[in-house]
Every structure is written in C-alpha cells, then in structure tokens.
Image 1 (spheres, protein in one colour):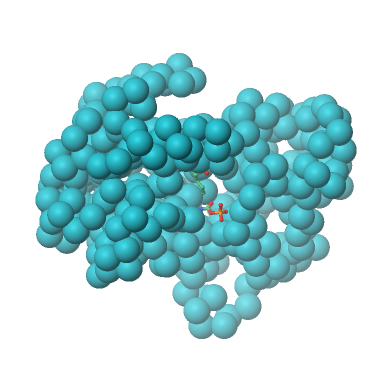
Image 2 (cartoon, rainbow, N blue to C red):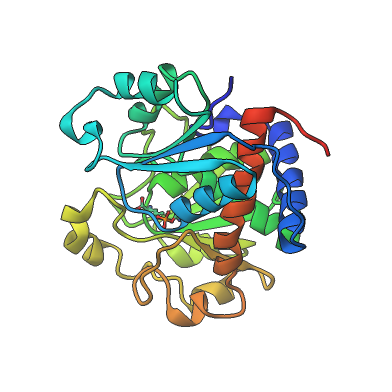
Length: 304
Ligand code: CP
Ligand code: NVA
C-alpha cells in the first residue's frame, strides 16, 4: 500500500507514469469517453481548512472514475471534539478505499497514514501541497515540454507550495530560484537539506525571475497564519509579480498560481489575466492528475 503525503514519496519513474496517465485520462474526459475503473470505490475527503479546487477536483474525479466521495470536516465530525487522529484513521479506513486529508501539521497526515488500512493523499498541509505541484508540472509539460534543466522562479512566501517545489526540483532535476523578504526565507523545516544544487535564494525578486522558464507565486498569508496578515502585507510589498518581473523572465515563460489569488498583492491583474498566465489550465489539471493518482494508488500501473 502506498500513500502520497509529499513529493518524495514517489520516484521519477512513477511520476512519468502519472503524467502519461493524466494525459490519457484528460483526453478521455475531453472526448466524453467514460472510464470507470473505480466502480464502488469510496473516497473520504477530510477538510480541516477551506477549499474550492481540491474539493471539486477530488469529488468530480472519483465520480468520473465510477466511485463516490464522502465530504467530512472538523466542525461536524468528532475530529473537532478531540477524537484522536489515530482512532479516526482506524475507523474511516475500515469503511472506505481511499482518504484525502487537508489539515494543519504534516505530522497529522503522517499519523493518519500510519494507522490507515487504505492509501492516504495529502490535500494540503502547512508544509506541503503535493497534488498542486503535480498539476503544475503536468501543466508545464503540456504547454512547454520537460522541466528538466529549466529554472522555476518562486516569488514571495516560503510556504507549503515552495517547499513542495523544492522537493520536485530534486526529483525532476530543475533549478528553483526562491525570492523572499528578509526574515521569511526557506528554512530546513523538517530536516530537509536546502541543497544549493537545486535551490538559489534571493531577496530581490527581479534577480530570481531573471531568465526563468516558469514564474510562480502564492498568497502572502496562507491558511492558518491569518494573525500575521498585516505584518506580511508590509514585509511582502515589492514582491508582486508584475509585467516588469515577467519581462525579466525567459521570453516563453509561463505564469502559474495555485489560487486563490489576490490581484494587486502577490500578482498584478495584467499578469494573472494576461497571455503568459496558465492559471485556469493549471486549476483544471488538478482533476486530471488526481484521477491518475487515485487510479495508481488503488489499481497500480494501468496501461489501458
Ligand atoms: N489550489 C488549491 O488547493 O485550491 P483550494 O484551496 O481551493 O482547494
Ligand atoms: N499556500 C496557500 C495555498 C492555498 C491553496 C495556503 O496554504 O493557504
């Protein structure tokens, strides 16, 4: 049994398989060709934070594959009344085939997985958002080909997305330029080596964007850190991805944002709504890569 809790849980070869399957499943979806290998399979989705894309893409995805989904949150389950995560995992995993969790600490998804009888997927934690980066890589490959040897510029907060990009850089062998304000730099949060073979740190976002093939950013204040919003608005002023920054990047550079976005803060409206932006394709691709992921976790490598 496999879990998908962070990028390093899968090998490059397994990612190549997932990207290929996502392409096939996307083509079937676009052509209205039914494909239901997960008939009678049940996905439990546990949300301890808000979501639009993750919920819709997992729920629509499992239905399209022939299965069904149960949506759970902390307010209306015993999780919100302190039932231990281990007991919740033991119970839920006896009744369903697959679990997706969005929560706070990465330790929680790890604890859940350690006590689960079925595969567990990380739908975002404070530390990582692997489903999103998988969709982003699929989107880049779809638009421009392989990311290997290319440069990705991450502008703004060192958050769950940037740490996931760093894991992806090691696996897919690309360079990650990260620009953060002083005091918000990437740290070795869970004992990761901040390997400078893959990571270059900047405090000037223009330098990080220079020559990049993909420029990407995210909100200045992630879910769970709302108390820091005002301080972060001050610290991150100057870290808006705007036309000038995109002009410093490679001429074929793409812009991505996992969404939701704040126009005028981390990205200007003319960039996110402009010709280099692929944010809507990126959002749609959550559906296709996660269908490939669910197929892989429940059925292994399918080639039909
Ligand atoms: N990008 C993303 O995960 O969006 P949601 O928070 O809407 O799920
Ligand atoms: N970094 C953001 C991503 C939202 C999809 C957050 O954690 O709130």
